[in-house]
Image (cartoon, rainbow, N blue to C red; front, side, top):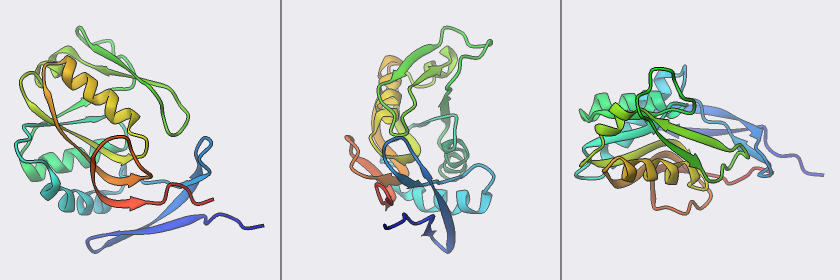
Length: 181
């Protein structure tokens, strides 16, 4: 019997990280990328990704999760503003746009919430969707739907890592194995 590797090492610029692997739904073991709490890795990835932002992008859009610190760094480095969708409704939200995520690679259905004033910041803008890892593209598609509903146009999909073959044309720094088991 062969056992799956328990970790995978990635290098971005001169920063390497050994990523633990975790079981994810029916996918087997996948590398766990963490930007939250790892400023050095986040800054290295953002430094490499800034050159990949599609021309004409006016706003970055992400979801409040692991990709948030990465998007913040991209915003700092590029000078582009960013907007975040949330995974839970907040009491202060005003007329939020609500979008179900059709399928999740990790086997968890989700709903995204975009506060009305934040949606207004996308209206008439060319928006690049930023994620940490894109596998199936379900979250990116849900974010794209929010952009369209807010009156913006998706100018591209940008991720630190691509895992497998997403249904979208995603610009990524590196490809990760689809599964390690």
